Every structure is written in structure tokens, then in C-alpha cells.
Length: 113
Length: 116
Image 1 (tube, chains in turn orange, brown):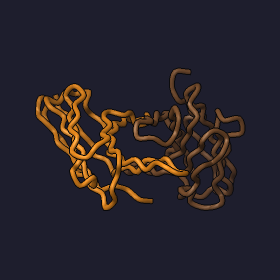
Image 2 (tube, each protein chain N blue to C red; image 1 turned 120 degrees about the vertical axis):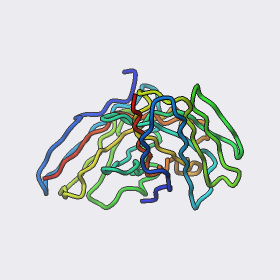
Image 3 (cartoon, chains in turn yellow, red; image 1 turned 90 degrees about the vertical axis):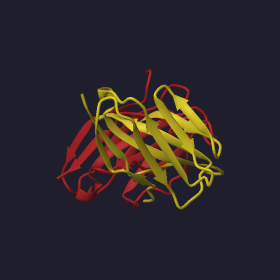
Image 4 (cartoon, rainbow over the protein chains, first blue to last red; image 1 turned 180 degrees about the vertical axis):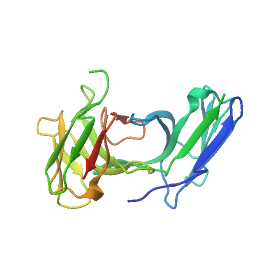
């Protein structure tokens, strides 16, 4: 199935560092989402973006919806150990008979105290 | 319950057997979704229900996979003649209303299916 291109694939950083990851698509999306998944759990929504160019923050997290509507990035500032997990971008396809998310390939984040 | 629940949490079966995976959505959510997540990948869409009907089943990989939601609440994903390639985590999600830009999908913890 279709998956969005997400990079980097993994990141190993020190506590306190800033992190940036991005996601690109060959298709246009009207909504971009960023999820975090912990081991043995389902994805949890972090940030939702609804308009091209939109910049949205949620605590130490900041995400932007690209102008072309084909990309998005997520920044995490001052990382802490509990930021460890897998981060997924997702584009939302809705309207008509469908309503589904297309996910990226994921970014594994490891934070060393 | 407070969130989406899925049972069983783990299922081990033999090749060729039939399995059923259950999803209990958040109370009052009319939309329900099934996704499949293979190791090292992001979730991939399987099927979307609006109420009792499957509005979009375009993600089901073949006719061995089938899902129902007879009363518009609990859903069951059914896999016939399982194959080793069916091994994955099967995630269920629900949302309040369905197609809209702000309708958030909430995920359950998943069922890990292993086909030996």
C-alpha cells in the first residue's frame, strides 16, 4: 500500500537536543497529522494541520503544513527521555465514500539521558 | 470504555486457520477503521465503516479478509485460510463522525497476529 516518505529513519540524540523530521508525498493532502507510537500501543495524535502554510505548536512540538500541500515537518525542542518512540506523519484522505489516513514510514527517536 | 479496546492482544495461529479479531470503539463514535501494521512500517488502511456499512473496503488485500459491524458499534475483522504473510499488528481506530478535516481518529492498542 501507499506510504509517505519520512526521514530520517532513525535518530539517536542526547537529552536537551532539538529534533527535526519531515515527510513528503507525491499526492496533495488537505490535512496533515503527526502521531507518536510507543511499544505495544496504538498511535497517539500529537498535532493536526488543516491549512497549507499553517504552523502549529503543542508544548515543545512544532509542526508545519507545507505550502505545496505535499510535505510537512515536525520539530521537537529540548528533548527529554519520554520523547522516545516512533513518530509517524499521516495525510488524511476524506470526502465522498472514504475517510482514511496514509501513514509515513516512521522515524525512530532514541534519547540518551 | 474510555478508549478503543481490541481483543485478543496477541493471537498465534497456524497457517490455513481462520481467525477473528475484535474491536470495541469509543462509545458514540460512528466511524470505525481497521489498519494493518507490518514490522518496521507505518499502519496501512484496510477498511472504513460509517455506522453498520463498509463505506470503503479498498484496502483489504484479498477476499480472505472480511470485516463486519452489524450493530454499528463493535467490529470484527475475519481472516480465512491465514498465511504467514498475514502476520502483523492489526489496529482499530474510531472517530466521532466520519469524513471531515477535523474528525480525529483514536487508535486502540492493536492485536498482534502471528501465523506459524
